Length: 177
Image (cartoon, rainbow, N blue to C red; front, side):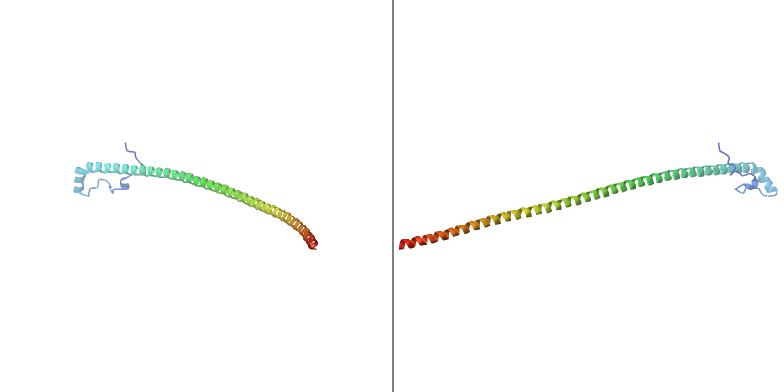
C-alpha cells in the first residue's frame, strides 16, 4: 500500500511535525476526563495524520526523484541535440568552405583561361596587323612599280610623239616648199 520512508517517519512523539506530544489533553481531572472520552479517537486521528504526512512526504520524495530523473533525461537529450546541431553546423561550414574553395579555384582557372585567350587574341591581332602591313607594303611597291612603268612608257611615247611632231613639221615644210 503506502511505502514507509525512514527519512520522513517520526521516531518519537517529540519528533512529530504537528506538535502532538502524547494525549494532548490538559493536566488535572478535566484532562483525564478528556483523555478517557476522546483519547482513543485523538490517537487514531493523530495516527492517520502521521500516516498521511508520511505518505505525502513519500509522494513528494518520489515526485522529486521523478522530476530529477526527467530533468536529467532532458539535459541528456538537450546535450545530444546540441552536439548534433554543432556537428551539423560544422558539416555545413565545411561544405560551404569546400564549395567556396571550389568556386575560388574555378574562378582562378577561368581567370587564367581568359588571360591566355586575351594574350592569344592580342598575338593574333598583332600578327594579322603585321601581315596586313607587309601585304599593304607589297601592294604599294607593286603599284609604285606599275606607276613607274606606266610613267616610263608614257615618257617613251612622248619622245616618239616629239619625233613624230618633228617629222611632221619637216614633211610640212617640205610640202610647202
